[in-house]
Every structure is written in C-alpha cells, then in structure tokens.
Image (cartoon, rainbow, N blue to C red; front, side, top):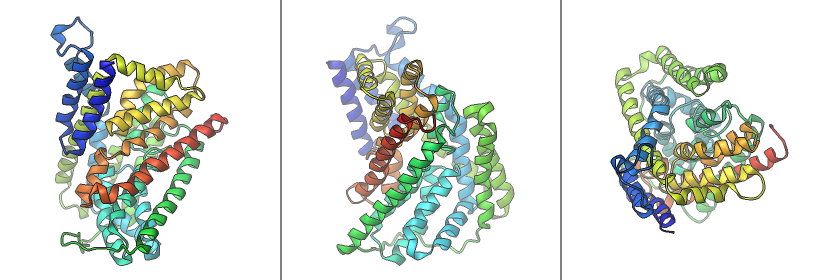
Length: 439
C-alpha cells in the first residue's frame, strides 16, 4: 500500500513541480527519492548486494542508458533544426506554404507549415519558434483570437506527423530497438489514422476559433509581437531538399541500420542544408553550437524523467500497475496502448514514456504473439496523446515561452487537439489492426 502511495504521489509531485517551473534535472531525482522512501528502496549501491535495486543505481542506470542510446539522434536533430532556422530555410518553406494557401486558409497554412517541417525532421521546438512569427502576422490580419496560436502550432507538430509511419521524429524510432521493426511499421493503418487526425483536428480547431469569434473575441496586439524582417531568404526548394534528404536516407538505411539510420539521415540533412544555403547563414558554427546546447537540455530533461522511471519500475507498486494494464481483457494492443499512454502522461514525455514502458511490455506481448508492426504503431500513437498534459515540456514552452499565453487561456484548445484527437486516432488504429489491416 505504501509503495503505491509513493508511486502515485511521486508522479503527482513530478507533475506539480514541473508545472511550477522547477527544472526537471532537479525535480526528477527529488521525486524519485519520494518514491524510494515510501517503498523502502535502499538509497545507495553500497547498502545492497551487487545488482540489487537502489535509488542512485537505478536512477543513474535509466538516466545514462537513455543518453547512451539517443545522444547522437538528439544532437544531430537539434543541429539540423538550428541550421534550417539560422539559414532561413525553415522560414522560407513556411512562408511559401502560407503564400500558396492564402489568407482565407490562414490557420490551415500554419498547421501545414508545422507539419511539413516536423515530418522533415526539424525539432518540434524549432518548428514552433520558426512558424510563430508568421502565425502572429496571419492571426492579426485575419483578426483571430491569438490564444489559439499554440493549438495551431502544436496540432501541426505533435499529432499526425510526429508519430506517423516514416516520420524521422524519435517517437517513431524508439520502438525499433525493442520490436525489430522499421519506421514504416503499420503504414497502411498509420496513413488512415493520420488523415483522420488531420481532417477531424482541423475541423475542430476551425470550429473552436469560429465560436470564439462569434462570441466577440478578436486579435489583441502586444508591444513585443515579432515583426516580419526583410532578411533575404533562400529559395523554398533549397529548404525542402534537406527535408527530403532526411526522409530518403532514413528509408534507404532503415533495414540495415535500424534506429542508427536516423544518425546518417540527419547528418545528411545538415550537410545538404549547409551546401545549398551557405550564403544565407548568419553564422553556421554558432547555429551548430546553439543546436548542441539545445540538444543537451532536451536530452537531459528527458533522461531525468527516464531516470525517475528507472526508480519507479523497481518498486513493487509499478509491477502491480503494469500487470493490471497488460491484463486488460480484449486485444493485447489495448493493454499496451494504455501502459504507454499512462506512463507518457505521468512523465510528460512521449519518448520518455516509450523508453520506460517498452523494455517491460515488448517481451510480454511478443511472447504472446502480438504482431510487432501493429504494436510499434500503437505504441507510437499512444505515446503522443497523454504526454501533452499541462506539464509536458513542449506544451509549457510553446504556450508560455514562445506564445506568451497562460495555460488558463490557451491549454484547452491544445488539449483538444493533442490529447483527445490522438486518443480517438489510437482507438481507430487498434480497431483496424484488430480486423487484420496492415498485418
């Protein structure tokens, strides 16, 4: 009983401290200590026998293990995003999409700009920073309530692109290590689900905005609003080509190198972006340095959460919880989806949720004969649902840091599009796989 109180209380404390703004590198081990004390877990390796569970050993094993597995992917992904940003290539692609769709489809233009950049491998945070100035300009011209800008940015970045088949985002690549699949696993179902999420989510976003406008809401300018600069931008084609290079290289090498193909793909994207747009850089090496620092912060924050999971999964209550989730009657995919969704939601991280859940549930379901491709796609989609609760790093950064909104004003539309829509998409995926589609 005490162990369960410690587990639930530790997770609740992690969410609370994160929403209060505490650094995850501090909050992670602090909440792990809470879990360990309530469960009677020894604190130091010196107090137990070799290989036995303890707070420091389990925390650092989870922390360092995640870094060892994903450092180069985070590093090259962040550098690629900053290179695309510094050269103006990301802005060029976004601006071209906006110009082609026009003012009447301002919201759709923002969503598609985010989707193209995300599916091309640009970091989610870089996409938000890059598209935000254009979003402000379009919302101002269309006189739309600015509190919906975070929802538009998030919808285009972390829903139908982040977890879809072929996406170079790590949420689609982590399952490969545990299931020996490919980034294109379950692509038939993934395509159907992605189209549903895109169409239904956009309809819902437009409906929310229309209702707000009808009730008298309008755009309110701020003194610190970004102003579109007259900086010369590269041709949109030289911005699209590096995105295509990432996708093509990852496709060519995914069978032979599995998740390591992403290293070559992102490196190829960086080199291509430099060669095509080298005359437009403010400073290429400064962009590399900024990308490196960004990667270390993102990687450290995620590893801090995975380290917390390393302690959580060592206590008796965690095994009870996982057994309960994986013993749910019906399709085994339901249990897997719930386990990943709940853990991703508790940790506020899709990648962290997968890294904690998959080592535990993958062998269990594979032994049961569950199709690995179906499990891969269900895990990917489910990780991108409850992870977007208020304490999620991307949600906090986009709403507060980038858009300058409050959770009270902006989070409900974000939750509708990044939690509810993916959950419906997840249900559709499970139903389609249950009928044998894509298997």
